[in-house]
Length: 88
Image (cartoon, rainbow, N blue to C red):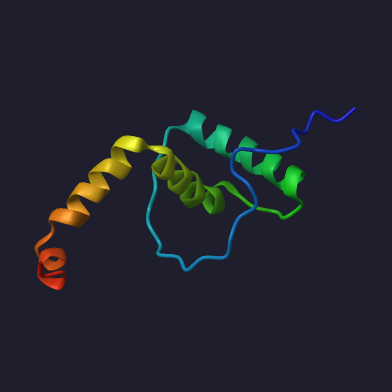
């Protein structure tokens, strides 16, 4: 009997252009990220590590954050470049 879930919240990963960042986290979080990466590999068949998953997890988190989306819209609509590009 398999204990692998049918689906994970983070689905198969898309191909994307990347920018390198340095990321530090507590050791217990790294253990959990490695466990998630192993489960993701088992679920979807493509080998990935925690470093590959982190950007996708952050993107999913930010996409689901209503406060962030509202704030991003407010900044986008009030920026001077935006106002100049769209005269009324």
